[in-house]
Image (cartoon, rainbow, N blue to C red; front, top):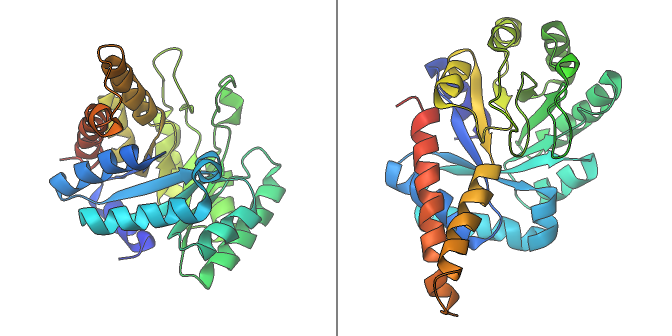
Amino acid sequence: MKLQEKLKQYQSEGRALLAANFYNFETLAGILSAARDLNEPVILQLSESSINYLGLPMAAQMARAGILQFGVESWLHLDHGASPELAKRCLDAGFDSVMIDGSEKPFEENVRITRQVVEMAKSYGAHVEAELGFIAKLGQEEDTDGFTQPEQARSFVAQTGVDALAVAIGTAHGFYKQEPKLDLERLSEIRAITPQPLVLHGGSGIPDEMLRNAISRGIVKVNLATDSKNTFMRELKKVLFTTDEIDLRKTFPPAIEAVKELITRKIRLVSMK
């Protein structure tokens, strides 16, 4: 099933798909083993920095091999693609989905480049996600004036034909300095006039009940990245500080297991089970 179809299915069921970023074999294995054991689908995400780190062919083939080995229903997605050129490289490499992030550009420019990627993706049968509004990235301060405007969201979707829309309602990328407060009423307003599946970025650190509430109001895809990195490194540090073991095959498994436990809990949460 194509990601477009899966998200529409989950939208009709009032559920969400977890979209988890991976950075190496170990984080990939933790994500896929959790999805396998739960018999639930998961979206695998790669950011541009991870693609630069791994190399595009290696990253794409690693994901495909992992999906096959673990027997999981999954899709490979470009997270926060900065340009149509990168989106095309990923589509050529076999990605099922790409995000074009023009959220920091003027509205008209965001529409233009998103529409360009949507048209490009048609020949691949690929899913396209875009972002509208300001979702703070690492080092940026939250700006409520940059929250997604419902009427703008309706217009953006109509003009671009994008498959899914990431909305700014109070989340942020990276660690939260204080508990986030999501504008759930705004989310409901966006959902009421926007037919496409809505995406929540900055899924790390959002309280469970708040996240479930957002899903009940229309979020269909929840992104998770910071929690995975943090969980992996914290567990790995524990091991390294207590052993002189040099065999990576012995020091990495506890960190893989920690990621698996995190992803297991998050999949259960967002799938509303």
